[in-house]
Image (tube, rainbow, N blue to C red; front, side, top):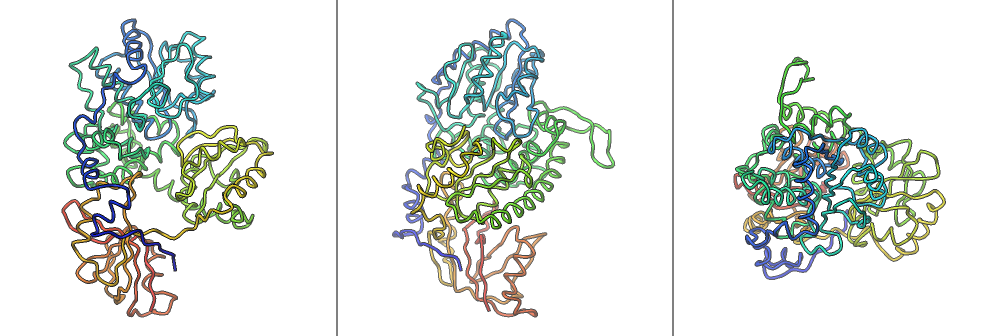
Amino acid sequence: MKKYKLKPQYENILETILKNRDLTIEQANEILNPPEDAIIDPMKMKNMELAIDKLKYHINNNSKIGTLVDVDVDGYCSSSMIYNLILNQLEYKNMIYILQNKNKSHGLEESVVEDIIKSEINLLIIPDAGCTKNDGIQQNRLIELGIDIIILDHHIVECEDINGAIIVNPNQNGDNTNKNLSGAGVTYKFVQAFCKKYYPDIDHTQYIDLFALSLISDMMDMRNLENRMYYNVGSTKEYIQNPLILEYINNKKLEGEYLTIEMLGFSIAPYINSVIRLGNKQERELLFIAMADQRLVKSNKRGCMGQMALASEEAVRVSNNMKSKQDKQKKDGASKVLKRIEEQNLLDNKVVICDVTDILSPSLTGLAANTILNEIKRPLILLRTNDGEKYTGSARNYGDAIIDFKEFCKETKLFNFCSGHPGAFGVEIIKDNLNIANETFNKLLCDVDFESAIEIDGLYDGKVPMEDIQTVADCQDLWCHSIKEPQFLVRGIKIHTKDIQKVGIANYKFMHNGCYFTKNYGSKVWYENFSNPGNKLPFGGELNVEVLCRFRKTHTGFYYIDIIDANSSI
């Protein structure tokens, strides 16, 4: 039986869930409906004027311009804005895009720098990357060859003083604008400022849908009022113009007047990401074209081979296949890693550091880490090596015990670099520091309990008042990465196995006290364990059920209880 911890309880359910998230009703309303003055003038960003003037200079001189496409959803959203603006809206044909040669290469790694040099471009625009120390080294190399550089990034700046590179980044010294922008957010503001100054008749708002997608895919802070304002607009179907997003809406049958945070985060972003991680260069190029420059392409669909099809339709078809392939590989890879963790007794350590060189591909390391976390319930670092001396990989935080795991690792001085977000980032470490890292983590975290009880906002015995379900479900647009969705425990439920209905391929539901309890994406194993605990009810019977759940509603206003997990007994 899992352990649960009931959060503080207040006068009513609304006050309880908001106070437990350090929010008042007024603040929640402001987040959901931010004021118009939440939008910050893009020209207030440091170096913005220099950047847009530099682009205009190169356009006036018919320079060859290239944009580097970074390897995640945010990177694709960012570069597609730049490419579409310059090539299609400005009808400037001396424009190219440069894809990374590897699925997990970020920024100016050597392999892509050679391609940049061979392209003979005069101006390189780097959205959503370009601010690490290694980027700075490679920038100097390109600048010496006469290539100008504009960086539109949102990661921590480690290379601020490079002559010839213009950095627009809210996290650099002297910038007092929105520090919670995604890479596409910085890029959108650049496009907005550029059009406002030089091309006021061009409609730059067509890119807000990509901005909204990037905010959710990159898990940016949605308490931020400017971010929330752009999400509110960019997720509304009336304003969505990007052909790839529109095709996903059609293909996934995403109903309602707008795309919820959950739709963007689970029904669109992971499918795009699967192609970026697992696809070959041709498939990744198809994805970028579908997002940035809608056109007809030759189909590889069985029965339609060689026929012309819209790039967006072909890209969504490829991504569906790639996502299924990725899910299987992720599941198999995570199982192998968990077995190794057990065999090597790595759970004796406060932070699990595991060499997965021979059992997990680089493109799946981060995804498998998220799956493994739920099993090991502590921070995790998965590493790979080519020479047995230098290890690189992905780190993931678990829970709230360590506020910023990236800084925590950096402060040990044992890693060559830790680059990315506070709870999910890339690392490099030498072999001699591996054992020292384990010893250091164990010492620093000796009193930390990562396997703390699951926190719940409410406990119900048997019956859940419908007004509580409605109150919480009506707030569901509030929940995001930075505002956790409330969870509840309902116990004392008595049902018969014949009350459990299968809906569609993998959804199950039952009704109790006038409300539907629904388990979405429940596996066959989950159903068998739930309906026949201990294999003691081969012909069915009565069950006592305890449910960890959320309160939800559909786009049509139907309220239900969403099962996260459930325990049953005879």
